[in-house]
Image 1 (spheres, rainbow, N blue to C red):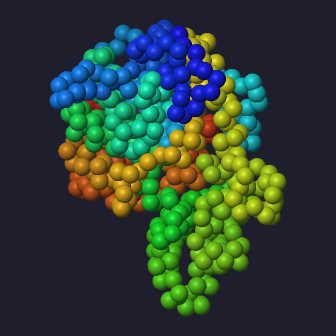
Image 2 (cartoon, helix red, strand yellow):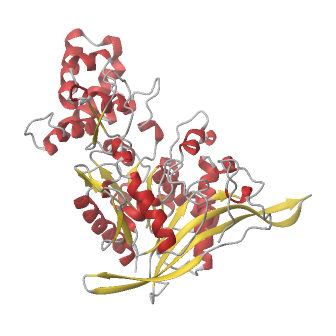
Length: 498
């Protein structure tokens, strides 16, 4: 068991930094055996849970000075008993944030156990519960869940700065090192290999495909990009960047449709109209600015208001530029409600009816309790791992301090890197999972980016898109969770080249 932290731990002084025992850190992995019954078939598997130590080669006066411990990274690995490692796929998975642990993919859709969180109209009450996940990807692939430094139980070691890992490049390098270590220690270099990321984790996953190829000659079979964002400019509302104002419109229209703003029109019909408007007329109008005639502007205001379910007066006041958090706050204002950002199906009462930005995202606050209780029980009672550190599910401090200094003066994007990885490895397949009600990483923005991958036409077939009538964590919606399990399994099987 890891030593107990002191009471005043924080991001700069947690985990090993707070230990009274300053001996060199060591891996603290715990191994347990489990079974899962799926359609009368018993699946026997082994779980290995704990922290592995990342080390860095050091030089003193130009001379090799050993491998210095830098961080302890928490992982949970599941391997199928009796499987042939040479033919058995392995999938490395993480969430995003930045600052999120892997709890969502782990207990939401991929792992052998899952949290029962409930959904929009039927949230699970405390104290919550776990259930077997009969749709687990473990039936088709071994699984390794990774918590980046300062998330989950992962921490920098004594004397090291956590913030050194809170940036694009060091994050990719550290997660890549975990992947390399696990593959080498478990003799899995000849296994089909996949990386799965959600949200910011899709940016990390795409960058890892390039990093692993170039740094270690480690070529992947596939990427699983769930709620994808590969170019931050497509979702960042900032001065001078009109791109997201258009790319969010289909998601606004979907959420408006869900809440009854489009009558009995089919969703597919509404989305087709919104996508056409977002790809042609609105971008043209935004770049025209004051050169629009009064008639043109009035027509655009009317059409955008109809699609989004907002009043024409509001669309006119914001100059055709609807920011996403404002939209979630405005759509149901007359009912005293706001919609969720992560999942626009969710609503909650807003105590301040004049607020410009909603005070709570119900699509997070309604489910995070179930995930927290579920994991904290599961890791101790079923996986046998104990640690007195708080399990950092989602660190806003890490998110706020995240550095994109690598991209100074240019777009934060993994498009060029992923394109290069696919050109160098023409067998690399990409699965993109998209939720129509996802207001954090809108589906049309992902389509926009995928269409701009710099790859030959022959490789376009390597990319597949899957859509779900749900939000950012589409697996919260039970029918979507079941379908997504099937879709991911099919992708792994088709991309393993065995």
